[in-house]
Image 1 (cartoon, helix red, strand yellow):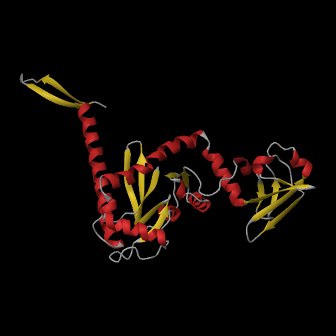
Image 2: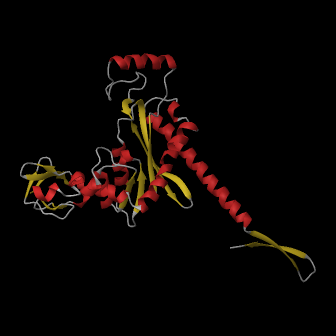
Length: 308
């Protein structure tokens, strides 16, 4: 199983007075993502994420986990305008086609229908906490489409529309139903049907149906367990900030700060390996028994036995 997480604004902080000047300046004019943030660090970019301003770089960490423990197997480092969704796509492409299905657990920002489809093609199951953007109702996953003839075959209630129209430019389907069919349907509020004078219609896309199917799958018991494992996604970024101080890297530029960041990743992995080795040694020590035996010469000899 694999977890991926991101840490934003890996760069050296300015001092307090500089921050005040920057804050007052940013209130007067909006920063552009590719605008110069610092003359001594021309590679750094600006990004607003989760309502906060970030200046510098962003890192993506891939952590492989199992019942024995975890270790960082890959990482990426780029300007912080590089999106989480792009990092996810690149991670899946690097992993490539898998012989045995693997699971990737990530934050909601990593999710998109394109990434889920790409993961499926590579025998990878992508699990995220949520989908970004407006969420459809799970009942919309029950619409049946024929993507060859571009027709809606039936609605969640099993009714067939008397007319379907497909808009190729937008990928939008418009299905027209008898008004009496939809007027008293218990699913009308959820499926998105709109009533007119003589008919009812539904506007929907194949992507909306895919998103609804994904939401329905995420509500199962199996995926609720996987989402609990996902909570550890924020662990590595937290350690990098608190213990390894990646927000105060004392070098400038994308290449130099990336090299510095790689040392931090190496340090985390070294500690993980040493901890695992110590646990294995302690486990072996507990299972060792010393047996004293009397030899033919009358001397006492000790034997070490490893209890399975």
